[in-house]
Length: 260
Figure (cartoon, rainbow, N blue to C red):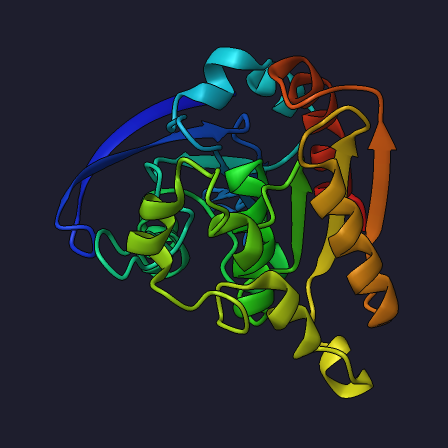
Protein backbone atom coordinates (compact mmCIF):
# COMPACT_ATOMS: atom_id res chain seq x y z
CA UNK A 1 0.00 0.00 0.00
CA UNK A 2 1.34 3.43 -0.93
CA UNK A 3 0.00 6.97 -0.67
CA UNK A 4 0.97 9.71 -3.13
CA UNK A 5 0.36 13.44 -2.86
CA UNK A 6 0.53 14.93 -6.33
CA UNK A 7 0.65 18.55 -7.47
CA UNK A 8 0.39 19.10 -11.20
CA UNK A 9 -0.34 21.83 -13.70
CA UNK A 10 -3.75 21.53 -15.34
CA UNK A 11 -3.96 22.81 -18.89
CA UNK A 12 -7.76 22.76 -18.60
CA UNK A 13 -7.89 24.79 -15.37
CA UNK A 14 -4.83 26.83 -16.31
CA UNK A 15 -3.49 26.58 -12.79
CA UNK A 16 -1.71 24.16 -10.49
CA UNK A 17 -4.03 21.69 -8.79
CA UNK A 18 -3.67 18.51 -6.74
CA UNK A 19 -4.78 14.94 -6.22
CA UNK A 20 -4.08 12.24 -3.65
CA UNK A 21 -3.66 8.65 -4.78
CA UNK A 22 -3.84 5.37 -2.88
CA UNK A 23 -1.99 2.50 -4.56
CA UNK A 24 -2.31 -1.17 -3.60
CA UNK A 25 0.79 -3.20 -2.81
CA UNK A 26 2.47 -4.25 -6.07
CA UNK A 27 1.56 -7.75 -7.21
CA UNK A 28 3.72 -9.21 -9.99
CA UNK A 29 2.02 -11.38 -12.58
CA UNK A 30 3.74 -14.10 -14.63
CA UNK A 31 4.85 -13.01 -18.08
CA UNK A 32 4.48 -16.52 -19.48
CA UNK A 33 7.92 -16.43 -21.04
CA UNK A 34 10.68 -18.39 -19.25
CA UNK A 35 13.66 -16.35 -18.22
CA UNK A 36 11.93 -12.96 -18.48
CA UNK A 37 10.92 -10.56 -15.75
CA UNK A 38 7.40 -10.64 -14.40
CA UNK A 39 4.96 -8.00 -15.52
CA UNK A 40 3.68 -5.41 -13.06
CA UNK A 41 0.01 -5.90 -12.23
CA UNK A 42 -2.45 -3.20 -13.30
CA UNK A 43 -5.50 -2.11 -11.33
CA UNK A 44 -8.96 -0.59 -11.77
CA UNK A 45 -9.33 3.00 -10.56
CA UNK A 46 -11.92 4.76 -8.42
CA UNK A 47 -12.21 8.55 -8.66
CA UNK A 48 -13.42 9.57 -5.19
CA UNK A 49 -14.90 13.09 -5.20
CA UNK A 50 -15.07 15.53 -2.30
CA UNK A 51 -17.92 17.73 -1.10
CA UNK A 52 -18.52 21.47 -1.08
CA UNK A 53 -15.92 23.32 0.97
CA UNK A 54 -13.55 20.33 0.98
CA UNK A 55 -10.55 19.42 -1.15
CA UNK A 56 -8.39 16.47 -2.20
CA UNK A 57 -7.17 15.98 1.39
CA UNK A 58 -10.48 15.67 3.18
CA UNK A 59 -11.25 11.99 2.52
CA UNK A 60 -7.81 11.17 3.96
CA UNK A 61 -8.16 13.50 6.93
CA UNK A 62 -11.69 12.58 7.96
CA UNK A 63 -11.97 8.84 7.19
CA UNK A 64 -9.92 5.64 7.33
CA UNK A 65 -10.08 5.22 3.55
CA UNK A 66 -6.42 4.11 3.35
CA UNK A 67 -7.02 1.32 5.85
CA UNK A 68 -10.29 0.28 4.22
CA UNK A 69 -8.61 0.15 0.80
CA UNK A 70 -5.90 -2.24 1.94
CA UNK A 71 -7.83 -5.39 1.08
CA UNK A 72 -8.78 -4.30 -2.44
CA UNK A 73 -6.68 -4.41 -5.63
CA UNK A 74 -7.82 -0.89 -6.48
CA UNK A 75 -6.25 2.52 -7.13
CA UNK A 76 -8.17 5.38 -5.50
CA UNK A 77 -7.71 8.90 -6.87
CA UNK A 78 -8.98 11.89 -4.86
CA UNK A 79 -8.82 15.08 -6.97
CA UNK A 80 -9.37 18.67 -5.93
CA UNK A 81 -12.31 20.48 -7.55
CA UNK A 82 -12.91 23.57 -5.44
CA UNK A 83 -16.54 24.65 -5.18
CA UNK A 84 -17.10 23.92 -8.85
CA UNK A 85 -19.78 21.20 -8.69
CA UNK A 86 -17.79 19.12 -11.18
CA UNK A 87 -19.07 21.39 -13.92
CA UNK A 88 -17.61 23.53 -16.68
CA UNK A 89 -18.69 26.84 -15.22
CA UNK A 90 -20.33 29.57 -17.26
CA UNK A 91 -17.98 31.94 -15.41
CA UNK A 92 -15.07 30.10 -13.87
CA UNK A 93 -13.12 26.87 -14.04
CA UNK A 94 -13.82 23.85 -16.27
CA UNK A 95 -13.86 21.23 -13.53
CA UNK A 96 -15.96 18.78 -15.52
CA UNK A 97 -13.47 18.59 -18.38
CA UNK A 98 -10.55 18.43 -15.97
CA UNK A 99 -12.04 15.48 -14.05
CA UNK A 100 -13.54 13.52 -16.96
CA UNK A 101 -10.86 13.93 -19.63
CA UNK A 102 -7.61 15.43 -18.37
CA UNK A 103 -7.29 13.62 -15.04
CA UNK A 104 -7.76 10.04 -16.34
CA UNK A 105 -5.16 10.68 -19.03
CA UNK A 106 -2.68 11.78 -16.36
CA UNK A 107 -3.52 8.94 -13.98
CA UNK A 108 -3.20 6.33 -16.71
CA UNK A 109 0.17 7.78 -17.68
CA UNK A 110 1.58 7.94 -14.14
CA UNK A 111 0.14 4.82 -12.45
CA UNK A 112 -0.45 1.10 -13.29
CA UNK A 113 -4.09 1.51 -14.29
CA UNK A 114 -6.24 -0.81 -16.36
CA UNK A 115 -7.51 1.42 -19.14
CA UNK A 116 -11.08 1.52 -20.35
CA UNK A 117 -14.63 1.79 -19.05
CA UNK A 118 -14.84 -1.56 -17.27
CA UNK A 119 -12.12 -0.58 -14.80
CA UNK A 120 -13.07 3.08 -14.21
CA UNK A 121 -15.44 4.11 -11.39
CA UNK A 122 -16.81 7.24 -9.68
CA UNK A 123 -17.99 7.94 -6.14
CA UNK A 124 -18.45 10.99 -3.96
CA UNK A 125 -20.25 12.64 -1.06
CA UNK A 126 -22.67 15.57 -1.12
CA UNK A 127 -21.43 17.82 -3.97
CA UNK A 128 -19.23 14.89 -4.97
CA UNK A 129 -22.24 12.57 -4.93
CA UNK A 130 -23.95 14.88 -7.42
CA UNK A 131 -20.72 14.97 -9.45
CA UNK A 132 -20.35 11.19 -9.52
CA UNK A 133 -23.91 10.58 -10.71
CA UNK A 134 -23.92 13.47 -13.17
CA UNK A 135 -20.65 12.51 -14.81
CA UNK A 136 -21.63 8.84 -14.97
CA UNK A 137 -24.96 9.68 -16.65
CA UNK A 138 -23.42 12.25 -18.97
CA UNK A 139 -20.47 10.09 -19.98
CA UNK A 140 -21.74 6.50 -19.67
CA UNK A 141 -19.14 5.20 -22.11
CA UNK A 142 -16.38 6.21 -19.66
CA UNK A 143 -17.57 4.70 -16.34
CA UNK A 144 -18.75 1.24 -15.24
CA UNK A 145 -20.19 2.20 -11.82
CA UNK A 146 -21.02 5.30 -9.81
CA UNK A 147 -21.91 5.84 -6.14
CA UNK A 148 -23.40 8.81 -4.29
CA UNK A 149 -23.33 9.29 -0.52
CA UNK A 150 -25.81 11.96 0.68
CA UNK A 151 -25.93 13.40 -2.82
CA UNK A 152 -26.45 17.13 -3.19
CA UNK A 153 -28.78 16.60 -6.14
CA UNK A 154 -29.47 20.09 -7.38
CA UNK A 155 -32.84 21.33 -8.61
CA UNK A 156 -33.49 24.67 -10.25
CA UNK A 157 -36.22 25.66 -7.79
CA UNK A 158 -33.90 25.12 -4.82
CA UNK A 159 -30.95 26.88 -6.46
CA UNK A 160 -33.03 29.97 -7.24
CA UNK A 161 -34.85 30.10 -3.92
CA UNK A 162 -34.61 33.62 -2.48
CA UNK A 163 -33.46 32.18 0.84
CA UNK A 164 -30.59 30.24 -0.75
CA UNK A 165 -27.43 32.19 0.11
CA UNK A 166 -25.47 30.46 -2.67
CA UNK A 167 -27.79 31.30 -5.55
CA UNK A 168 -25.42 33.87 -7.10
CA UNK A 169 -22.62 31.32 -6.99
CA UNK A 170 -24.85 28.75 -8.70
CA UNK A 171 -25.71 31.28 -11.38
CA UNK A 172 -22.03 31.87 -12.14
CA UNK A 173 -21.44 28.14 -12.43
CA UNK A 174 -24.59 26.90 -14.18
CA UNK A 175 -25.88 30.01 -15.92
CA UNK A 176 -29.51 31.05 -15.96
CA UNK A 177 -31.02 27.75 -17.11
CA UNK A 178 -30.40 24.57 -15.13
CA UNK A 179 -33.56 22.50 -15.54
CA UNK A 180 -33.36 20.38 -18.69
CA UNK A 181 -29.65 21.05 -19.17
CA UNK A 182 -26.88 18.46 -19.17
CA UNK A 183 -26.10 19.46 -15.58
CA UNK A 184 -29.58 18.37 -14.46
CA UNK A 185 -29.32 14.72 -13.39
CA UNK A 186 -33.11 14.28 -13.58
CA UNK A 187 -32.94 15.31 -17.24
CA UNK A 188 -29.91 13.10 -17.90
CA UNK A 189 -31.70 10.09 -16.42
CA UNK A 190 -34.65 10.62 -18.77
CA UNK A 191 -32.30 10.22 -21.72
CA UNK A 192 -31.91 6.58 -20.69
CA UNK A 193 -35.58 5.77 -20.18
CA UNK A 194 -35.80 3.33 -23.10
CA UNK A 195 -34.45 -0.21 -23.10
CA UNK A 196 -31.77 0.35 -25.73
CA UNK A 197 -30.09 3.13 -23.78
CA UNK A 198 -30.45 1.47 -20.37
CA UNK A 199 -28.01 -1.23 -21.40
CA UNK A 200 -25.33 1.46 -21.77
CA UNK A 201 -25.75 2.92 -18.29
CA UNK A 202 -23.21 2.51 -15.49
CA UNK A 203 -24.37 0.62 -12.42
CA UNK A 204 -25.63 3.14 -9.86
CA UNK A 205 -25.76 3.14 -6.08
CA UNK A 206 -27.24 5.82 -3.79
CA UNK A 207 -27.38 6.07 -0.02
CA UNK A 208 -28.41 8.75 2.46
CA UNK A 209 -28.97 9.27 6.17
CA UNK A 210 -32.53 9.45 7.44
CA UNK A 211 -31.78 12.72 9.25
CA UNK A 212 -29.80 14.26 6.38
CA UNK A 213 -31.04 17.58 4.95
CA UNK A 214 -30.45 16.05 1.49
CA UNK A 215 -32.83 13.16 2.19
CA UNK A 216 -35.82 14.67 0.38
CA UNK A 217 -33.99 15.21 -2.90
CA UNK A 218 -32.37 11.75 -2.67
CA UNK A 219 -35.80 10.21 -2.21
CA UNK A 220 -37.05 12.26 -5.16
CA UNK A 221 -34.21 11.08 -7.41
CA UNK A 222 -34.61 7.45 -6.32
CA UNK A 223 -38.31 7.58 -7.20
CA UNK A 224 -37.43 9.27 -10.51
CA UNK A 225 -35.06 6.41 -11.41
CA UNK A 226 -37.67 3.88 -10.31
CA UNK A 227 -40.36 5.46 -12.52
CA UNK A 228 -37.93 5.36 -15.44
CA UNK A 229 -37.14 1.71 -14.62
CA UNK A 230 -33.43 2.51 -14.41
CA UNK A 231 -31.73 -0.17 -12.26
CA UNK A 232 -29.99 1.14 -9.16
CA UNK A 233 -29.29 0.37 -5.52
CA UNK A 234 -30.73 2.70 -2.90
CA UNK A 235 -30.22 2.45 0.85
CA UNK A 236 -31.24 4.58 3.82
CA UNK A 237 -29.30 4.42 7.08
CA UNK A 238 -29.27 6.15 10.43
CA UNK A 239 -27.28 9.36 10.29
CA UNK A 240 -26.97 12.96 9.22
CA UNK A 241 -24.92 14.94 6.69
CA UNK A 242 -21.63 14.46 8.51
CA UNK A 243 -18.34 12.56 8.50
CA UNK A 244 -19.39 9.86 10.94
CA UNK A 245 -21.89 8.71 8.33
CA UNK A 246 -19.44 8.84 5.39
CA UNK A 247 -16.66 7.20 7.40
CA UNK A 248 -18.96 4.24 7.93
CA UNK A 249 -20.49 3.94 4.47
CA UNK A 250 -17.47 4.55 2.24
CA UNK A 251 -16.79 0.87 2.97
CA UNK A 252 -20.06 0.07 1.19
CA UNK A 253 -18.75 1.96 -1.83
CA UNK A 254 -15.56 -0.09 -1.99
CA UNK A 255 -17.56 -3.32 -1.74
CA UNK A 256 -19.98 -2.21 -4.47
CA UNK A 257 -17.20 -1.07 -6.78
CA UNK A 258 -15.21 -4.29 -6.50
CA UNK A 259 -17.99 -6.88 -6.58
CA UNK A 260 -18.67 -8.55 -9.91
